[in-house]
Image 1 (spheres, rainbow, N blue to C red):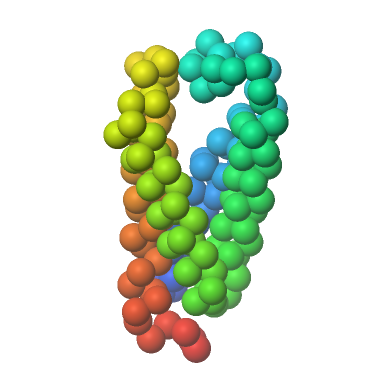
Image 2: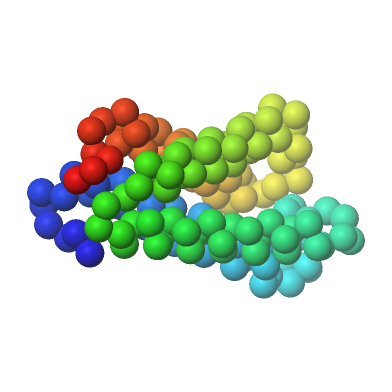
Length: 140
């Protein structure tokens, strides 16, 4: 829906679609479905316990589905924009704190590049909806 150039939610829709596909469905499916050996080789899973990683993958898939659903709505509700800000902010904070505590020392160079891209997507996802929450887009 709303594929016109005059769509006031165009930037937010694009952000929701990109982050829903890459972070939510892509990242969630990777955490949920990749074998333990591949995750250990990449430095993601260092212990034998995999259920927290699988749970995080399932939750990311749920969040990605929510983003894709919100992007397809005619009018994006303030609740969806607020959820987008909070979820992306929390993901960015977790990644930043883990980096500052040097928890990514086992990651490969490629893994660090992917992590940086995920962090940037989280920052974009946290900042983009703010203008729609402040603006008068609620009843259009």
